[in-house]
Image 1 (cartoon, helix red, strand yellow):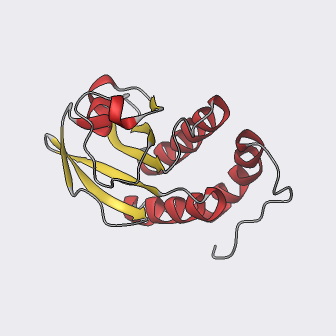
Image 2: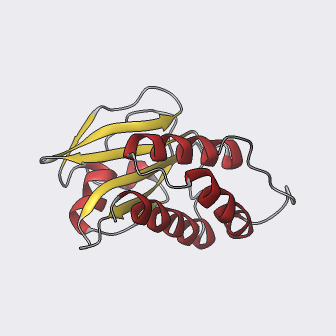
Length: 164
């Protein structure tokens, strides 16, 4: 399915927006299982809806995260296990919300404009991290609990789609 994603209430909270776009994301993904295709469309939709500074995926390849589909300025290509926010999220197998990236020990600054970051793991059926969704904002403390839980729900949908 190709088309546009529509939001009926432009003043809606991030949680309300996620609720509204989830069925549209399911329809957009359809039966597609190719990891790159699915990630590319999800990154494009989230950028279109939320207008983040940078949003994209890093895929687990051996002991590194390798850049996958993204929207935004050029990015770091490889991130080691346990390094930066993305590598730490992978190592901890947990979502990380960083309100001020300059205060995060070992933060990897791919862009000086990034001020806060949200990283959500994508897991296979056994709970192993296969990729991470990385979102950067130009604002400090840009990610509320509704957005965090919404991105976790989107990543669960995407994980089920690609890694079933």
